[in-house]
Length: 257
Image (cartoon, rainbow, N blue to C red; front, side, top):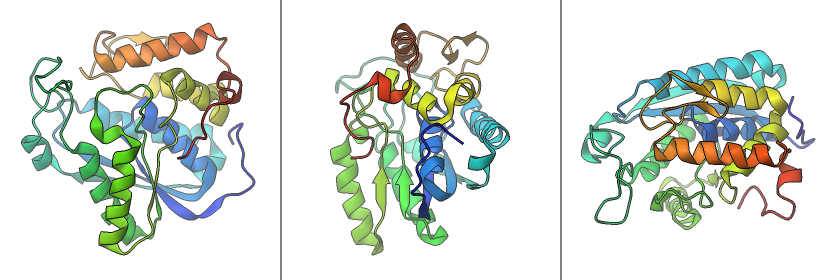
């Protein structure tokens, strides 16, 4: 399996909010390393580029082929149609708009309440599937200006979900305190160069949906904010000699809050 094997595997199940991007790919590997049963959920919220949905399946297929230990734990994939939400929460990800800062000081790629909606739907699904952990790739360190990526937001949401559903869900955010460089390092720690290759070749982050050019850090236009973060993280990690996570971030915060 991965290089970060943990003798304690949670017998309970996890549901990974899985977009097919770099962060959710690493989160899927993180969950597969820790949970005996892992399901994934994706959301069709009216995003402009279908390539994101295609990347989800490509990542899952590569993981089942290259990591047989994880493949035994990787279970159903779910896709939920919430396109009406995307129509209401108009943004540069759902409409033909420029990627820029708005008058509120937020990027035009911000989909208001998207992560909140995702977790509500995910929790409802997890309730029916008997899953207790909800895993998301939100991150404060390489903060993109999205207030629903903050841990304080997710702590409040976790409390609301548990009160409203009489459950004991735990929202896991293993990347919350990591830089993009450390996220690449964590991929190597979890699955070695094989997982790094899956992330580079199959995952998709580019806001413009560009899959024409394979850079060292993956496919993308190379100019949008998502590509910029991914590229800079890769270059910083590469400059350090592409270490595993423990080497890259001695003294770093714990992976889970």
